[in-house]
Length: 336
Image 1: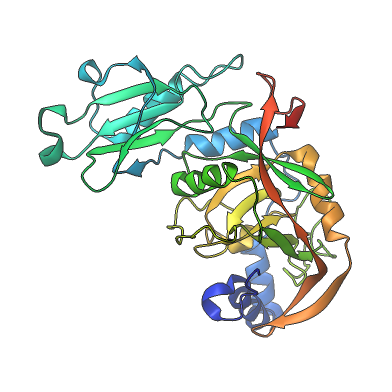
Image 2: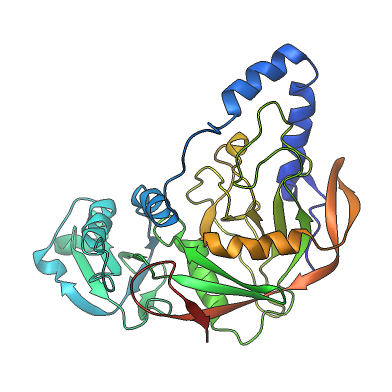
């Protein structure tokens, strides 16, 4: 049932290809653009843990009009800040250790002066019994609180189960809180009928095995991605707001537009700049599963004058909670 992006609103790659055609129409313009957009192929990428945590450190977003519950580790009546970002950062400082779980995985802030009154600036830091199923106290327009989640190293990992293996995905609630909240809702379902991958395109001659763009190569098609839909039949989907949009890297999991279509990238797409809300990243050792899906039989199709590769047989998927041991993000993880 996945939409095939047959209109401009749902076809973000169409504009990219049309732009590429125009840019590459002359050798001079092509040279200028490739110089500006090509990543440094020779640069060494940091480890997955360090890179995702560093990217996450730049984010401190929460959901307005939401009060999350949980055991208090800092009492807001005695712990105040001027902004939700400061409150979020205070929680992150209690979640920076390399061993064991975070001491704080939830922050709740009162930032509306008129509505909060004497409680303005209160920052409650809390600890959930189950961070993938946070305890919600209240939600709605009358709620004066803004709340957010923090997942430390080895935490916040969900499984995207397919017939070719389970993709373990590290979620980014501090960068894309609304998106992650939706993913956590899907976790509560015993099915995800309609959730599937339906498009698969390899790296071609444009990107190497590490996802780095090859000098002077075109930027697609193919676009080095697998695309699918995360909308369970019978479960209403509300369009996702635009959230943090970092540069797409190999393993990035991002919405197309406001969803529910999404993609997993097999390459570093610096040329796409900050166009997509990224809500997670596939663990590096599981990218081989993505590579398997890309090798499945496809048929050619055209979406808004863009050549695409559609899977002959869509690959169903379901989201699973993961059992894990504490500690390293790359430790063995099993699905529940």
